Every structure is written in structure tokens, then in C-alpha cells.
Image (tube, rainbow, N blue to C red; front, side):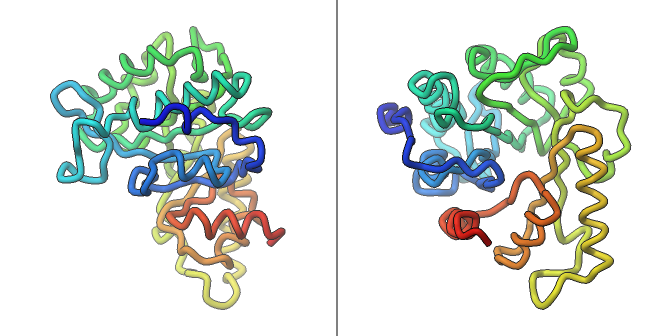
Length: 254
């Protein structure tokens, strides 16, 4: 990992708070490609293998050098150091979604130990009090929710689902609602979005925002018409694998 490249201030890059890099580790330069385009949120799938948190979509893709620390935590910390306490100088909080692919409890236990070494850059909750910092970590995939909630000192939040919109969990424990677009909407970006589906989308966002949570959908079509509807509905994170395409769209004024 070239920490000099990772940590170099990106003052000429406009941070894009709504830009989320889905399956970020599949890009040529995990994290760094997203940062170079101003993305303020990335997602990494992790497996626990022999005590190491390895990043990849499947076990066949894993390698000993592709650890969560090497690809994400170390470069993020380096940037925070040189950018006056933020990932982007004067920028918003950065989101790292960790999608647990292996067994939930053992993987989270290892993740908790690893994150403790980066507590100086991570938003945390201690005895119910939120201490905001440069990076917020959200656990998706196999989520040991009771185990996470029981932590007295907690450096992560839980990624909820639309079925959790009515949950009694606090927004600090469940700061994000994510769900599969195709499970709730038939529109794929051709023609106008049906008015009934547009209303469903806006109702989801309104309910989440009223509870202090952000919203993200995955499996959204890579289509500017869909991105436009998401933005108009105030969806917080726009999920994409087409990093350059989404950056152009967000900078175009839509």
C-alpha cells in the first residue's frame, strides 16, 4: 500500500457526500479510486480467515495482502492525519460499510478488536453518548445485532432494512437503512417512474429521516434517470459500480 498516495490531500477534488462505491474492492485501486473521484462512502466485503479480516466478494478472491487494514483502515487513517482530522479536508464524515460474509459473531469479534486500533478516527458510542469523528463504520451482511448492541464502547452501527423502519433501535445504533431496489420497485429507469412507486420511495426516505437514519439502495440500475429520482427523493447514498459515471452525473447539475 502506497500510504503517500493514500494520504495526499485531495484539495482539488470536490467531496460528493451522496456517492457510494459498491463492492469498492473490485476496482483497480480499492478505496483510492473512489477517493480520487470524491466519493464519501465505500463498501468492503470481509471474511475471517485464520484470524485475519480479508476483503473479497467470495473466498476464491481472497489473498493474504488484501486485509481490511491494508486496503481501507490504514489509508483512511493516513488521510485523516494530513487532512486536519477529516478524510477530505473540511469535508463530511466518511462512511465505511463493512459487509460481513463469514460467520457473524466471530467475524465481528475480530473486527471489533481491529477497529479498536483506529478509534481515534472512528465515530463511536460510549455509554450511549455519541463521539463523532472522521469515519463512521456500518456493519452490513451477517450482522450480529444483539452482540453489537451490547457493546458498552461501540465503534460501529448496524445497517438496517426497510423492515426496520419502525424499529425502536436508536439512530446511533442503526444509522442506515439499506435494501435491494428490485425487491421494492419494478421501475428500472425506462420512461417515467410510476407515481405510486415514487411516492413509496419518498415515504421510505421521509420515515427514515424522521428517525435520524440515512437511506441507501443496492441493485439500482446504473441509469441517470434512476440516480435523478434518488436524488430528488433525498436518498442519502447513491449506490454504484460506475464511479466515473456517477461522479460526472453529480457534478453536471443533473
